[in-house]
Length: 222
Image 1: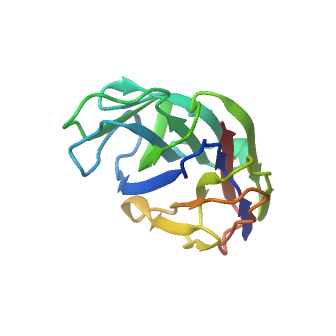
Image 2: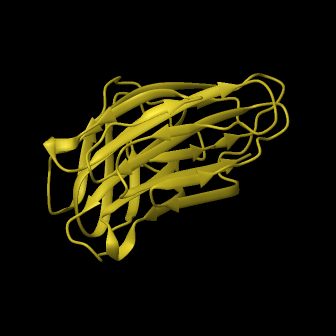
């Protein structure tokens, strides 16, 4: 499998930054609510959460209906799933204002129908202008995913998430791989990656995996 993922966040005169916190993989199955306790203990600032899940049954639309961090509701930038022929789904969520609550590590993901093994990755970002404004978003499914995107003038922060049902580990090129996990020893692989760039233009990011049942997701906000 080959995946090309670009996810850009525009910023001002100060260079953007992104810090990967951690990934929590849940072994829970057939649930409509997942509470993933992340490390750190301090949640003040602007955060991005990637979510990946495996549907409890094929053909069931189980996209998250809400995601909270430290009790603060996050805004979904984009979400996609493989649909009736596959069970993987991914989405990316952001806090549109600085979270002011310290000491709460929980990411709570809620869905309308049952999911399995919900996995979340947590990132802190700085120096982006308007995190609630989505200017571009793309998803793709299949053995070869192409999600090219032009960066904003001046530089970008990139975050990507991919999932497959093999499970087979991902190999990233162009981004720093932050996590590559097999939740609960299941036939489900989840990977996330990120980077900050100080130059504009198209950045081509690739991820490879042996799985044909795969999905990738990007968003672009200014």
